[in-house]
Amino acid sequence: MSIVSFINFINRQTPPAPDGKVIHWPVNVTESFEDPGPPLDFIIPGMLSGSVGSLVAPGGAGKSMLALQLAIWLTSGADILGFGADEDCKSVAYLSAEDPKPVLRQRLYAIGEALSDRQKEQVEEHLLLMHLDRVKPDLLSAAWLRELQGLAEGHDLLVLDTLRRFHSCDENSGSEMAALLSKLEIVSAQTGCAVLFLHHTSKSATWNQLGDIQQSSRGSSVLTDNVRWQGYLVGMTPNEAKHFGIPTAAVRQYVRFGVSKSNYHRADHQHWFVRGETGLLRPVELRAANRGRRQQRAEI
Image (cartoon, rainbow, N blue to C red; front, side, top):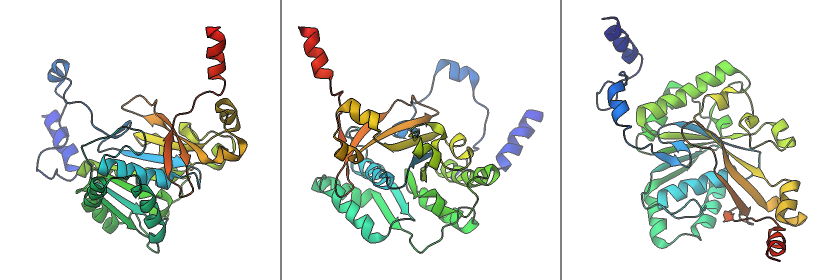
């Protein structure tokens, strides 16, 4: 009876599932030994569907453009990031609380030039892009949480750009950040929609060129510890420029995307992009500047 009582107690702590089924139930150990179950579904490389993750980068690195290109990749299947084409289009809601509508339109136009007419139609059907300038979102507000949960129910991914704009808490407070992230976990758990928030790296991580480590996120360590996935976007370092033979004048155009934390997948995704005048990130394959010379010597 104590086990049944505990199960009932746990299920009373959370709202019921939309289909009325019990959410929390012990794992069937025998069944799991015989069958691993369906393969895990990842919404973006390394990030499990229905989980909470973050994308961290210094200001001006291009994380908003990257996030928007991720959204369009998911909604159109177009291989605009070098992640591969995907015919299984997803539904994405992107809430921009930092950039105004004219900026979003410029970004869409730049990305749209790389899409076919059919892919543009897919984006129109599956992407909700909304600006929230002059609005003060509050994730700790019951009204905001209710509306976000309703929005998430119709989408596979909810993007919040940036996290700082969605609360008025102290980012350095572990308890306040834990409470904040728990709200996002409620949204993802109740709807099955993954939540990706954009966030800034700390000043020290930026200065010391450590934006690609887990601890680069600004504020409390809870912002990294309590998410299941953390991606990063960093600029090219002088050493990397030397390694790849990139001219000094062009170094600022190159950025690297990778995964610094992935609880359910190997965090080995790294991609280089070159940023154009419109901010569009184009995938590029970089090779060591002296690689050909070494190969030539080896052949001799």
